[in-house]
Length: 350
Image 1 (cartoon, rainbow, N blue to C red):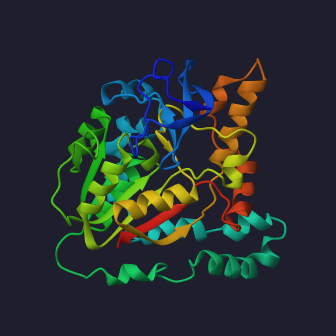
Image 2: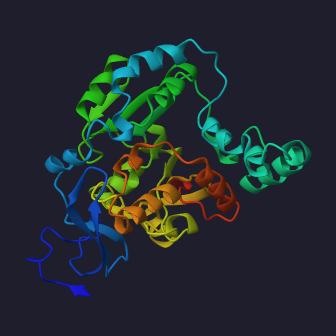
């Protein structure tokens, strides 16, 4: 249905192109924290992006990111995590380590413990070839970044697990920065030496061509002003720099399982291959490589959401349970066909 009556859906326009012409796809509750609150998933008639309505202002969105939210569950242990990693020997360099974990033990997971000895080496070779992870430097264009005596500059969008910061900060000697909407998290990072910006990409200020690497793991889908924020990231990235980001990719088999879960209202936009390519190109990025590593969480969250809709005695605690190994194994198989739900995009300036 074409929707133009703003009394029905107030504060509703495409957050990417600002069009007020859209189709309503479906309605979903915030099942994780506020199940009585419902939001719409709409499709923009102009740019075709799926987006969440109504649009929430920045001063209200914090309500939907409580301390129990995964990325913020580590703030009381940040100093301990940094101290632990600081005393471990250097074993990896960013961003090679980001890719290495997708290669390790793939065949073990696929083959199972009883037959892994027979097929391990053969399967691992072909899987590594498929993912292009069989080299010490799996993505050749990283070698184009000139080596200097100056510290490389690394920006991490959103917090994630602080061990990521610690590895890069202490092992690689990076000048580390982050941006996050959680003030206690930012304060905790500042205490261990990270240049931490409380706010969003929109509110942060950096010179052009400043960062060698920008990393955004499950952040792009949270942007309140995705077009503006991507263009700003493009301006911050150096000419030979790399922007690495991952996000839920809808229309993959993993995200189509049972009932697609859009995680409203935290996810502002919901991307497909086509719309992801469009927004990156529009911001001035070229897609150098896309990896489809195993994920599994989409399978589990979609199943949880399906059970919530069809089972009156739904166990709400299921949202806090660890990933079911069954879904992880299925996702490994889907990843071989580029159908796992959490691709990693490697972007450079065009």
